[in-house]
Image (tube, rainbow, N blue to C red; front, side, top):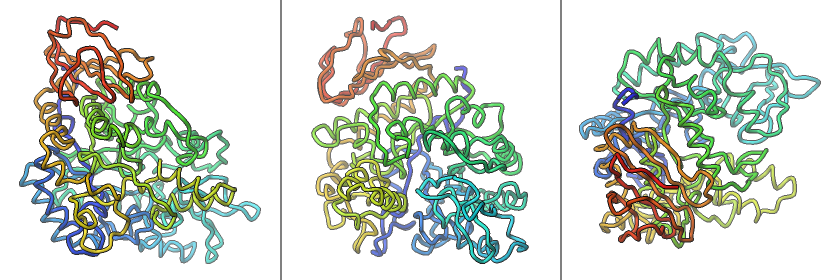
Length: 558
């Protein structure tokens, strides 16, 4: 193998969104004791690394991604003692924990910002980015990810502060070395506790282009890539983070990278860069976004998805590494977005599991995918909780869009789809809570739930479990080369993974219709895993997926 072996390449991440995972005390909010109750469930599935979304003290404007104290656990999630118990429980089971590092911005209720906004000569003023307006308007035309201007005016000092997200999430000023040192001290605090790394939220945005010129681009996505992200100093900062903290620990780091294209991916994760272990590449998740972003929905097809995976494989080569994901807390449910969540929900959920767990990269499973959880269908805006959705609802309806049309969009792409409570059983509130949940449970919990999949030997859960075990026992699926076949086919995704020891073909049908494919000497190949009970040779049924192990001397016929 030409790729260097490391533990974090061979393991699988499972993301827990704690607010929606499991509520132990009936207050309607998931918590750390609730996670502790489910550790054996996770261990039995076969995942290795738990990525825990923020549990820090926060006013929860953006569900914990607005942190008011980086050293404390929010009381609704539990105590630091319970956090330590959870961490010990994971380690006792041979599992690891990575925390969310959210340091592009803090909460406006953090003591730093409360001081910063008091006066221009406050010692914390330079912890954030303050600018004078222009002709009674904001300093420039930058837009927030959550809609509206990225600047908020403060009467007290007569200046604007920058917030690329919510106005309650002011951006930290990484030009200030005191800010960076505060971040590094906090990282070391958690690493000394024994956490095994960090998922770094929007890490590509931390360095700002100090001229703060207007952003005149055709789309918001282009603005993010060319104006908000990838400023040259971002690599100086991440390298400094590595030299100051990360290199002293055997951990892993995963960068979330808005605006990181395949052209610059190696700048963050190249083996010689001493920056990040891997990044989540987001290109496939933004294929359906128009010029205005998430709720400006455009059509896309499988060819586009295949192109993204090929571009990133080529860009990384043997020098870089990515984490592969198909959904998380910021996107729609994978079976609703990439599969068929009605007629072929089980089949397409299993097929997508094959894709997720046979690509080169460290897979990341989002909570509930292992049971085939789907998007929710809310009927009224009163049911939505996500700040981004609520802001764009106001923006789009003010421009004339009907309430019904916006709700239809939100039910397709909104972030609340992934945030409805985990469906543990068929009891009230899906067994998530004995109280009133903070967001409604998906009504299909009566038949889509953990108890149901655990009781059914051929369920999605056990399909994931089998795939996870096979992947770990066959490192060709981790490190092997990748070659796409039939790149211009609009329904089939077929690729080869190989090294000098083994060879595999993955054959996936992304459609409701059967399709023929051709493999020479198919009878000589072993069908390792498939999502239908009986193989039907060269005819793929709707949403069928197969993993073949192939003699090294055999070739594929296109």
